[in-house]
Image (cartoon, rainbow, N blue to C red; front, top):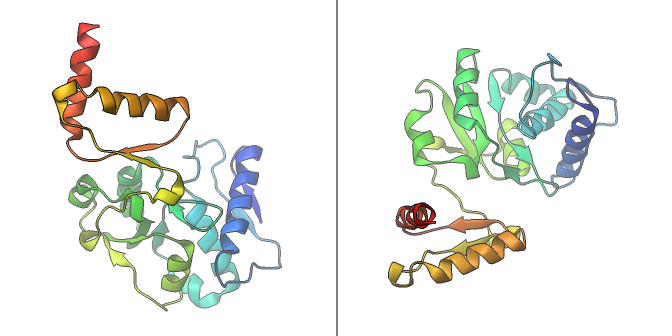
Length: 212
């Protein structure tokens, strides 16, 4: 696979992620040369956002039925090496752009689902969510269904992804314990997902910053 229209380093990374993600499916990676042209070259592109679309394009280049089904379908998401689909920035803006350019359906990462996205997604656009490349390949082959956006719920990262779940403690101690855990996560560069009354925590942090 050769990806053009991006800086050389990014192009190689996209190709490597697509090839690795293919290995997580039961699909044979095409033996023929496939060139993915992400033109225009001068247009800046969100890193990783085209991974899923590129992977589907590679499959479509090898399977005519898939090519016919995805003609008016958009795909948004970054691929991990094990085939999981990750959220990328600007999902709502991408949905608006795809709707304006004739897309009828779009597949997005399950991790991108938020209440705001469900409220403001283009109403005439069918949006589906998927967690893995296996799910998407099954859908484009008409072998399985994907969950529509309006029926989907946000799926938090799993413990296996290295995330630390932090539930803000009651503010009796000024969130001291919570701050200790956040500081430790920052020091060790561990991603954190806050659950619970996050708004109250942010208000408390803003108050501390103001007093400082």
